[in-house]
Image (cartoon, rainbow, N blue to C red; front, side, top):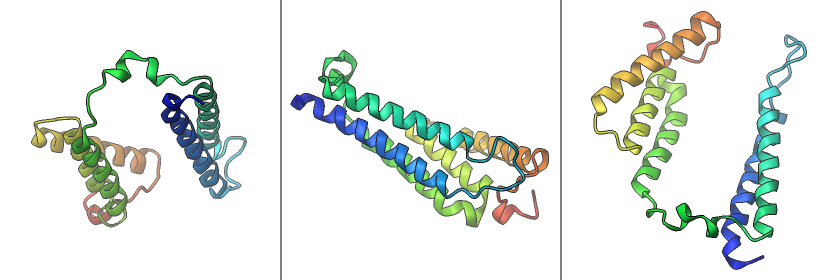
Length: 159
């Protein structure tokens, strides 16, 4: 393998690892007799298959010489925006940490505002209002229309 193709191979291995993670997590989803032919694991299996196929393709491409060193967009890419990556990581951590305690609406609104900030939004008040509107609508759609409890958290009596 050419030295300039090593990062491409690492990306392929990362996608393969992600596909294997999805396979592992899909295997632990409990099957319920309520579903007929299509169960709760259909979409995760499709995602796992696509990730694994993509990972194999990326690794094969890297072994044939790679792709990123020939792309002008990659060669002329700006430096990594660590602030944006940090905000995205913080958004995901906050969502996972707070969703059970505060509920879907509040945790997802915080996620939305942080993601907007990561993408360079300069209007946090609008981001907050839009985030509240979208997450309340999503919560009510799941709760009222689909009958799926995604957790209201501290807003249990209000929503």
